[in-house]
Length: 170
Image (cartoon, rainbow, N blue to C red; front, side):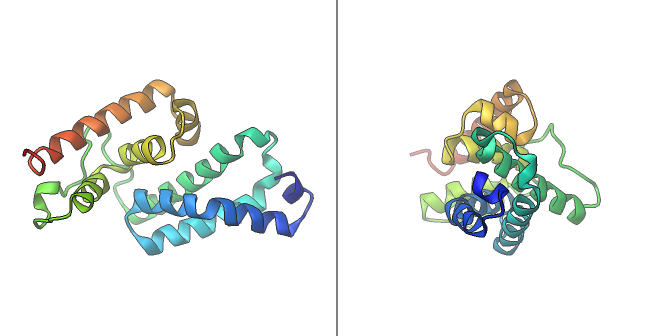
Protein backbone atom coordinates (compact mmCIF):
# COMPACT_ATOMS: atom_id res chain seq x y z
CA UNK A 1 0.00 0.00 0.00
CA UNK A 2 2.76 2.44 0.90
CA UNK A 3 4.66 1.50 -2.26
CA UNK A 4 1.55 2.22 -4.35
CA UNK A 5 1.17 5.59 -2.65
CA UNK A 6 4.73 6.31 -3.77
CA UNK A 7 3.80 5.44 -7.37
CA UNK A 8 5.09 1.86 -7.58
CA UNK A 9 3.00 0.24 -10.33
CA UNK A 10 4.14 -3.26 -9.36
CA UNK A 11 2.60 -2.68 -5.92
CA UNK A 12 -0.78 -2.18 -7.60
CA UNK A 13 -0.35 -5.45 -9.48
CA UNK A 14 0.50 -7.22 -6.23
CA UNK A 15 -2.56 -5.79 -4.46
CA UNK A 16 -4.74 -6.74 -7.42
CA UNK A 17 -3.47 -10.33 -7.40
CA UNK A 18 -3.99 -10.60 -3.66
CA UNK A 19 -7.46 -9.10 -3.38
CA UNK A 20 -9.23 -9.32 -6.76
CA UNK A 21 -10.67 -12.80 -6.21
CA UNK A 22 -12.07 -11.79 -2.80
CA UNK A 23 -13.60 -8.61 -4.20
CA UNK A 24 -15.03 -10.48 -7.19
CA UNK A 25 -16.57 -13.15 -4.92
CA UNK A 26 -18.09 -10.44 -2.73
CA UNK A 27 -19.52 -8.63 -5.76
CA UNK A 28 -20.84 -11.84 -7.27
CA UNK A 29 -22.59 -12.86 -4.05
CA UNK A 30 -24.25 -9.48 -3.78
CA UNK A 31 -25.20 -8.95 -7.42
CA UNK A 32 -25.73 -12.52 -8.61
CA UNK A 33 -24.40 -11.57 -12.05
CA UNK A 34 -20.95 -12.47 -13.32
CA UNK A 35 -20.64 -9.56 -15.75
CA UNK A 36 -21.78 -7.03 -13.17
CA UNK A 37 -19.42 -8.51 -10.58
CA UNK A 38 -16.55 -8.22 -13.07
CA UNK A 39 -17.44 -4.59 -13.84
CA UNK A 40 -17.70 -3.66 -10.17
CA UNK A 41 -14.42 -5.44 -9.37
CA UNK A 42 -12.72 -3.50 -12.15
CA UNK A 43 -14.26 -0.22 -10.94
CA UNK A 44 -13.15 -1.01 -7.39
CA UNK A 45 -9.51 -1.34 -8.40
CA UNK A 46 -9.68 1.79 -10.55
CA UNK A 47 -11.00 3.63 -7.48
CA UNK A 48 -8.26 2.07 -5.37
CA UNK A 49 -5.60 3.33 -7.78
CA UNK A 50 -7.08 6.82 -8.01
CA UNK A 51 -7.77 7.26 -4.30
CA UNK A 52 -4.91 5.42 -2.57
CA UNK A 53 -3.66 8.68 -1.07
CA UNK A 54 -6.90 8.99 0.93
CA UNK A 55 -6.02 5.91 3.00
CA UNK A 56 -3.75 6.82 5.88
CA UNK A 57 -3.99 3.70 8.03
CA UNK A 58 -2.65 0.50 6.43
CA UNK A 59 -4.55 -1.57 9.00
CA UNK A 60 -7.81 -0.36 7.47
CA UNK A 61 -6.90 -1.29 3.89
CA UNK A 62 -9.04 -4.43 3.72
CA UNK A 63 -12.13 -2.69 5.09
CA UNK A 64 -11.49 0.34 2.91
CA UNK A 65 -11.24 -1.81 -0.24
CA UNK A 66 -14.45 -3.73 0.55
CA UNK A 67 -16.20 -0.43 1.29
CA UNK A 68 -15.24 0.82 -2.17
CA UNK A 69 -16.61 -2.40 -3.70
CA UNK A 70 -19.82 -2.13 -1.68
CA UNK A 71 -20.35 1.49 -2.69
CA UNK A 72 -19.80 0.58 -6.34
CA UNK A 73 -22.34 -2.24 -6.08
CA UNK A 74 -24.96 0.04 -4.55
CA UNK A 75 -24.26 2.70 -7.19
CA UNK A 76 -24.82 0.12 -9.92
CA UNK A 77 -28.04 -1.09 -8.28
CA UNK A 78 -29.25 2.45 -7.74
CA UNK A 79 -28.88 3.12 -11.46
CA UNK A 80 -30.61 -0.10 -12.43
CA UNK A 81 -33.63 0.34 -10.12
CA UNK A 82 -35.92 3.30 -10.48
CA UNK A 83 -37.44 2.79 -7.03
CA UNK A 84 -34.14 3.22 -5.18
CA UNK A 85 -32.96 0.87 -2.43
CA UNK A 86 -34.75 -2.24 -1.28
CA UNK A 87 -37.36 -2.21 1.48
CA UNK A 88 -35.45 -2.82 4.70
CA UNK A 89 -38.44 -4.38 6.48
CA UNK A 90 -38.62 -7.35 4.14
CA UNK A 91 -35.67 -9.73 4.01
CA UNK A 92 -36.52 -11.43 0.70
CA UNK A 93 -36.63 -10.15 -2.86
CA UNK A 94 -39.74 -10.93 -4.88
CA UNK A 95 -38.63 -14.43 -5.79
CA UNK A 96 -38.60 -16.99 -3.01
CA UNK A 97 -36.83 -20.33 -2.83
CA UNK A 98 -40.23 -22.01 -3.33
CA UNK A 99 -40.44 -20.54 -6.84
CA UNK A 100 -37.23 -22.32 -7.79
CA UNK A 101 -37.37 -25.48 -9.84
CA UNK A 102 -36.71 -28.61 -7.76
CA UNK A 103 -33.00 -29.10 -7.32
CA UNK A 104 -31.16 -32.19 -6.14
CA UNK A 105 -27.91 -30.60 -5.10
CA UNK A 106 -28.06 -29.23 -1.54
CA UNK A 107 -25.22 -26.79 -2.15
CA UNK A 108 -27.05 -25.29 -5.09
CA UNK A 109 -30.27 -24.98 -3.08
CA UNK A 110 -28.49 -23.14 -0.26
CA UNK A 111 -26.62 -20.93 -2.72
CA UNK A 112 -29.85 -20.03 -4.50
CA UNK A 113 -31.57 -19.24 -1.20
CA UNK A 114 -28.71 -16.97 -0.15
CA UNK A 115 -28.96 -15.30 -3.54
CA UNK A 116 -32.62 -14.48 -2.87
CA UNK A 117 -31.84 -12.54 0.29
CA UNK A 118 -31.98 -8.80 -0.16
CA UNK A 119 -28.57 -7.31 -0.71
CA UNK A 120 -28.16 -5.73 2.74
CA UNK A 121 -28.70 -9.14 4.36
CA UNK A 122 -26.66 -11.05 1.80
CA UNK A 123 -23.65 -8.78 2.27
CA UNK A 124 -23.43 -9.16 6.05
CA UNK A 125 -23.93 -12.92 5.75
CA UNK A 126 -21.21 -13.17 3.12
CA UNK A 127 -18.73 -10.97 4.99
CA UNK A 128 -19.26 -12.85 8.27
CA UNK A 129 -19.58 -16.46 7.06
CA UNK A 130 -17.43 -16.54 3.93
CA UNK A 131 -14.88 -13.78 4.57
CA UNK A 132 -14.73 -14.35 8.36
CA UNK A 133 -14.86 -10.59 9.03
CA UNK A 134 -15.51 -9.24 12.52
CA UNK A 135 -18.66 -7.29 13.36
CA UNK A 136 -16.52 -4.17 13.61
CA UNK A 137 -15.06 -4.68 10.12
CA UNK A 138 -18.49 -5.39 8.65
CA UNK A 139 -19.90 -2.26 10.27
CA UNK A 140 -17.00 -0.29 8.84
CA UNK A 141 -17.52 -1.73 5.34
CA UNK A 142 -21.29 -1.24 5.34
CA UNK A 143 -21.25 2.14 7.05
CA UNK A 144 -23.56 0.96 9.82
CA UNK A 145 -23.24 0.15 13.50
CA UNK A 146 -22.19 -3.18 14.96
CA UNK A 147 -25.68 -3.62 16.41
CA UNK A 148 -27.18 -3.10 12.95
CA UNK A 149 -24.79 -5.71 11.55
CA UNK A 150 -25.76 -8.17 14.27
CA UNK A 151 -29.45 -7.51 13.67
CA UNK A 152 -29.16 -7.99 9.91
CA UNK A 153 -27.11 -11.13 10.39
CA UNK A 154 -29.67 -12.54 12.82
CA UNK A 155 -32.55 -11.77 10.43
CA UNK A 156 -30.66 -13.23 7.46
CA UNK A 157 -29.84 -16.45 9.29
CA UNK A 158 -33.37 -16.82 10.62
CA UNK A 159 -34.98 -16.16 7.24
CA UNK A 160 -32.55 -18.50 5.52
CA UNK A 161 -33.25 -21.27 8.03
CA UNK A 162 -37.00 -20.87 7.57
CA UNK A 163 -36.73 -21.05 3.78
CA UNK A 164 -34.45 -24.11 3.88
CA UNK A 165 -36.62 -26.20 6.24
CA UNK A 166 -38.85 -27.56 3.45
CA UNK A 167 -35.80 -28.71 1.51
CA UNK A 168 -34.10 -30.40 4.44
CA UNK A 169 -36.93 -31.69 6.64
CA UNK A 170 -35.60 -35.22 6.63
